[in-house]
Image (tube, rainbow, N blue to C red; front, side, top):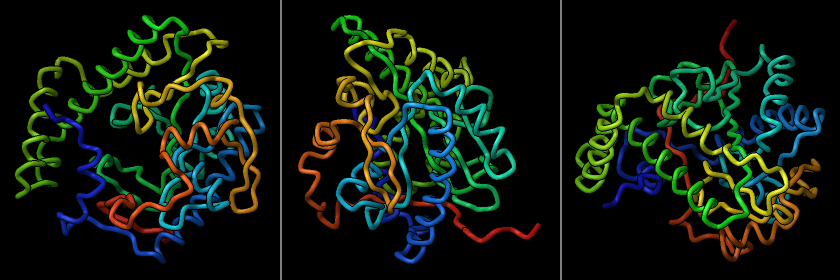
Length: 304
């Protein structure tokens, strides 16, 4: 039974004319804002000595382009679980007036199992921000977790993570069913998949969405061995089993150039990028380029 909706959202802008897709000039303006945001975020990470690195398209951009992939409109930063609390405390203390800081830990309307830093006085409203008022330009931070050396325990860890991640996704669809169904109105196959997720989400409506997200987050951090052979990014694009890495190759860091900045990437970035993208030096065909579709977008500062 097909339930994955990630690929649907990547291409939905081609079928829904009400969604906003950024042009090249808007992307360049957005990249300037994002890199300035990253200066603040990474500055705090480095001040507290946190283990972090650029991942996903940001790591690929650093290695292949020494900056952004030309069409990229976001930035991906991973942070080690043990550094999450110190980072949040330090960042909020320094930048509370400049940024909104969203986490799963104490916000009932935030529906993502990650950390999200959003720039105040800008608007970047995506499909996950249906009822979100604090929807400025975002930088997402996924959490690197320990996982078990024992193969059986690692599998249990992964199955539980995948199951809870699916429940979170379906529960979100059930909670915002009218919005999601309107996004795919007139699209037969997409509507069928969305309705499946809505049905499953209703079965788990005995807990709120925020409660399920906290359970998911708590399960992901259950392995406390800071010296385990493997680490994992359960909320990454390839989910738990697609994002298990050898600690020595992924968790440890090395520097790469990103727009003349010296930022951290996984120590063996070739190992990481080949696992994520295959031949990462090869540019993708035009039809496979990812674009984020938005509900609203405005980079101009609001009048105070």
